[in-house]
View (cartoon, rainbow, N blue to C red):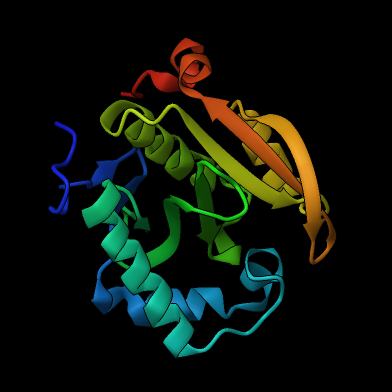
Length: 189
């Protein structure tokens, strides 16, 4: 896949052995809003805040615009085995981090099956290979042990912390050179 031209949305559909990821569309608003307002998902993702449908729509629109401006935004995650949005994975700016950040969320009933890891690997590969990003960051509340472990399993390295809603917000970074040296950079068959 060639890097997207500025001003045009790329064909950024991704596939893994169990998942398909596609750029989020306006029609996904209901599914994403339902996911983002689920207590277990919003706990760390949105610092426990119950967001409005208007907020969800604005976030979705910003992510869709990100695909046009930067070639990256938000993907919805679906299983090959059955239709329906089960989560999301995104590459987007996340202040105060200067780098594009990896973000993700999955329906809590599917946690612990490696699906978020699988989606994140596909999105990181897209970011490093298709977009040629030099670095991708990730921010996580230190008390969110599962996400800390996920970022570390992805090969990200701890770079520092800031204050967050649950205490320490830990920042991780994976650079392109480290990614290329990792086994994760090679497509799975």
